Image (cartoon, rainbow, N blue to C red; front, side, top):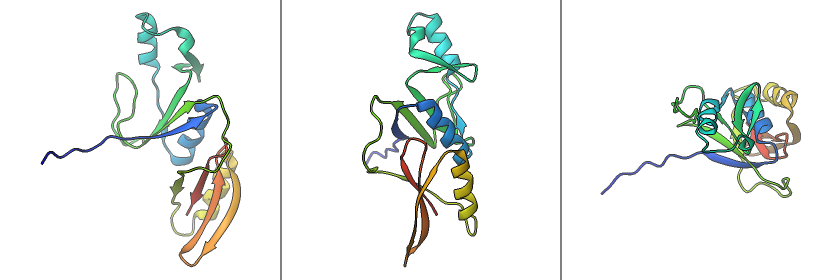
Length: 152
């Protein structure tokens, strides 16, 4: 039998992928991917138009894509693309309109949930509600574009 391990990432639709990548990188302690070397090389070779990019924090970035990756995971130095835990935000023309079908749960650790909820709210998240059930308690928040996530 052939064993296969799939490489994956979570892709999230966004109206502003760079702002979302920056929020989630700060929220999770991740790094915003730096694809500037690849973008500059492809523009220089005439493979992509400069209009497919924007300047973000002084670096060339893809206009419609931005990602945040775990700082300890491997990445391709040539492209800046993460090869491990990664959130990719892709630009879509429409804003979020309904409840997420998939959401992230983040775990703050014992006794740290309230402080973490306050920190995330300071980054731009909105606290939607507190949940208390026999199985536990958690906070439901929304990121700056309204995507729900839970803090345990």
